[in-house]
Length: 329
Image (cartoon, rainbow, N blue to C red; front, side, top):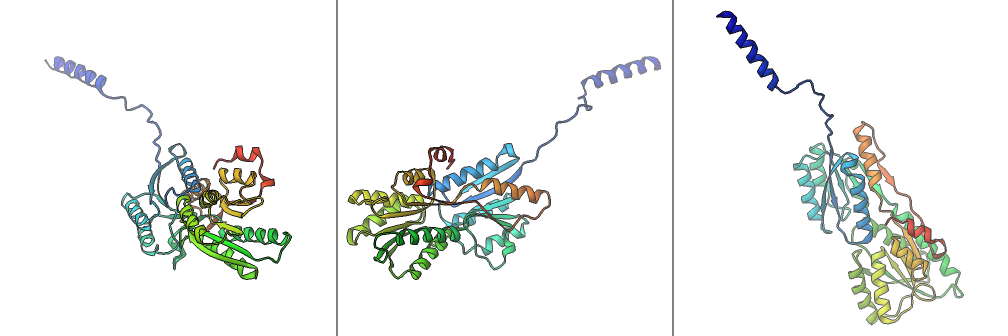
């Protein structure tokens, strides 16, 4: 009887062992994605769209990231909500493209309290404690704008009547943004140095083509045609061109001098064709630098506090078919 019981137990254990999973299988290596919350200003311009694309491509799943994207539609209060949501979601990093420079102290304090590093891109933030953010990636707006103003001075000096009065119409971007503040400051400083320069008006184009068109159209109805239009981004320049076209006013070569910032492919094409006199580049491809900063932090390294993207000025003679074809924004 005891023998029968032992045989039965042995048979039962054999059957059970056949039904058990093979614990000796080698499990696949688990991949943990780095979670990044990105609060973007909006989609107000071709530059901004290219900037978002660069971030999405660099912080992709294929590169080891999970990107949580929020479009603030150019409202700072929407960015506050997005950052607080990212904190609640316990993301690994927050990337912020701020609408304006001021007003960020409280929400950045909340991110620091949650031990979440914040990387600022494009526009800067004005805070009492720079340690509230880890690093900033963007353009040297004032340097590029100073170079554009110097180009204008040199161009005007080379004219037949270098001492003639110059009327400048100024299309400004979103008030309080870094690009607006520094590009405006450069032009204002240039006008202060040249007695013949007069800024006839500073119109708020909010970095959009539609707003710049409306503002310029209204201006032209009651004011003389300016000698120069200084546009703080390409889309505003396109709006100015639209308004000038409606009035039959020549611009570019032989007409109103147009200066614009960003140098997206469309603007460069107009510049090559003589419709825009100067394109000052503002490189939107921040994604690779942001990715590199996060990877540095993951390795326990300390990234640079500021990281500038390379940029240059373009006039018609510098723009080739090869340049336009290779331009990815």
